[in-house]
Length: 454
Ligand code: TRP
Image 1: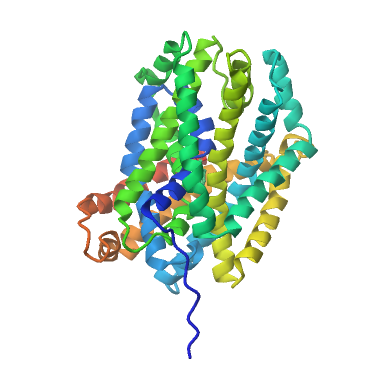
Image 2 (image 1 turned 120 degrees about the horizontal axis):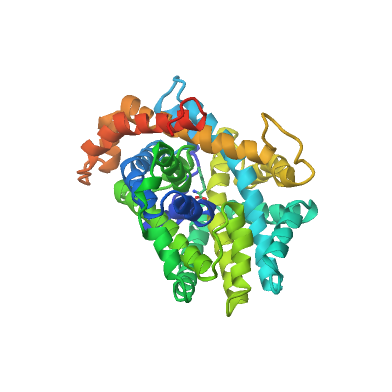
């Protein structure tokens, strides 16, 4: 009697796969980062460039990750071990797990802020505050210790709770509910925003191309944003790919996920900028846009309380479906490589991420002066993942599929053993062999400051 290994979990439906993967992709990167980056870089001109990168490079990298994961049916480390036994490619997997720790630590810190802001929105905390007071509110919240820590742990707890329930009952079930909810909230916010008097200025800020702002640095900015936003480069989508059923079409899945992610990013811009301009506020950038500028708008707007609750709920939901995808990378690794039970693996992952996470949370308060290479812990995690680990991971992943795994096996996986056509295959191979590695290498070198195309 041979003991069969326990059956590996998988997503139950194609909609489930798309909800989960789009849930990973759609996050703070879309709703918080994309709008202001697009706004700063020529609006529509940037968006056109971004779209080109998503299609020409993002989708091929995403497809490469899905191909690796579904072929190997393993966590990111195990996948490379299995597809390339006794070769050093598994280092990509180790890098992916390390990146997952780092991303989860700082990302959950910001995700925790969204909970504070949901709370403030519900209790009318923005009402009657001047822009200066709202600024102080953000500063005094982030420079405190207990509140940001509590919200961090609540968010980690929510993430762990979903992951513990498993792939089908946790990840798939929750994203199938949360993603449509996210879409509904976003549509309501867009309708509110674009119907405000004076909204047109914001629409043209976002959609009127200003090609004079496009330079070499913009090009690289667009590519970097595409990577972070699509959740590519560290094996999140290798892990999710390993749960995609053998009968699903990987090509159309990657296409739908990438398009949904891009669509939501543009929609987020449409929800934010018309309102910003309607109230004649100079768009504040970065953290300030969402946590300072928007509360200022909400409290001047009729029905602002309800819209502010919706907005921060939207941000929290978007972040949650992303944090679960990152935690799953670590948990799948612990389960399969350390032979742990899912529950124990989740506890261990959550506990160890939290050690790093606490330092990220405290980076705006008691640990603000604790610097490594001139960065706070938060800054270091943010910089190292986005500018080093993701591009490097993405680069190695496409090189692996194009030059080691090879066309024949890739074709077999992408056509489901010959059942599908996959007419895009020659283009896909060309891109992952030449175009993507070169383009990614540029971003990588630029990100590290080793070259400076300005
Ligand atoms: N894509 C998410 C966002 O836009 C963040 C994210 C989730 C991520 N998983 C990732 C980024 C993996 C890079 C790699 O907010």
